[in-house]
Image (cartoon, rainbow, N blue to C red; front, side, top):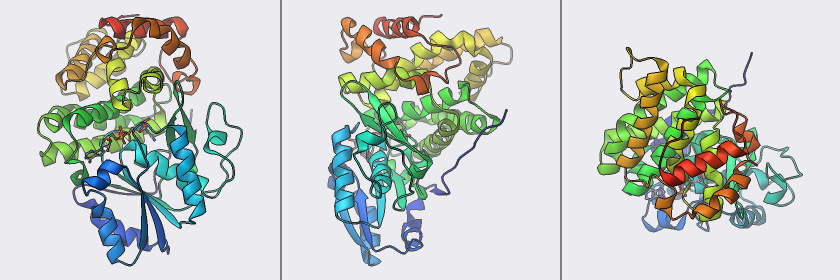
Length: 391
Ligand code: NAD
């Protein structure tokens, strides 16, 4: 078996890596830049760290802030129209996954025709054929890994869909943990669990390889070892740095191996109930892993080990049970509601959630256990009741 391994061409990581920005922009020979961010990041002055040095270096920067969390398709359509109209030469994304996903989409679709909807994975009819404008992605959350993936996620009426192509990959990713210090505890927790889910799902994915495994296990070590501190003391530089490297590595892991059941079931929660992506993943994470546990016991033992436990004397079966329990404890300890009831999801919504989740065939295909409609319903039911069901 062989696999394709894809990386973002250039990354700068670590504290103060943003200092490389101007030198990186200069290599593209551009003048007029669109900076895509969200209104809150502009309001707290975080975007100044990007805008000020670039303006001082003589670049023309327009700041676009019409971005909302879990961006719906229409927000993407507006941004793409704006990028085409004003003929920018480069796009820089600064923010969480919501701003980054739309920045890369705008950079690529600026040179294509038609609507964003035409390029959606589930229903689109057009194909991306050109690389588009150069793009630099600068995450301010430690979560999605969007800075290293070729995916843009958009919210639709009842679920989510993606636009995906290798041309959506950043030319340069700058992953500076200093930009995450201002993240409030709830967003730190949700985005951190999103990153942990990426690493765990990539590690148990049917498409896992020794390369994605290396990224995934190191991401699990870093995130599980630091997420509690990052949530309780956001000023802790070491914890922020570990989360930043962890989410970057988790992004590389899942970009190459894929995510599966947790994400497939989380998308309709975001679509139908507007629950933040990280929280949708977090609330389902232990229940999906518990349900598929028996299909990947040996790998769950490795995950338990990477989480800092030493299961040498445990069988894969025993370690896998402990791993699921530990994942549930982690989600609870960082104060994310651990049941669907905790998010006020009514029980009669489970059927509709199931009908949408089963559409996510691209994601479900990588699950180590085949998940059919009846399985998905049982997992939602378990997450509703707060009792892990072991298939
Ligand atoms: P987000 O971008 O929606 O941001 C969440 C909130 O955090 C916003 O209110 C934002 O203003 C705030 N915020 C961001 N950085 C901050 C900072 N440094 N200080 C204070 N506040 C800050 O959240 P996210 O979880 O990073 O992104 C979610 C989106 O990414 C979803 O649409 C999801 O589907 C998508 N996603 C994409 C990929 C991918 O590979 N492209 C992977 C996973 C998720």
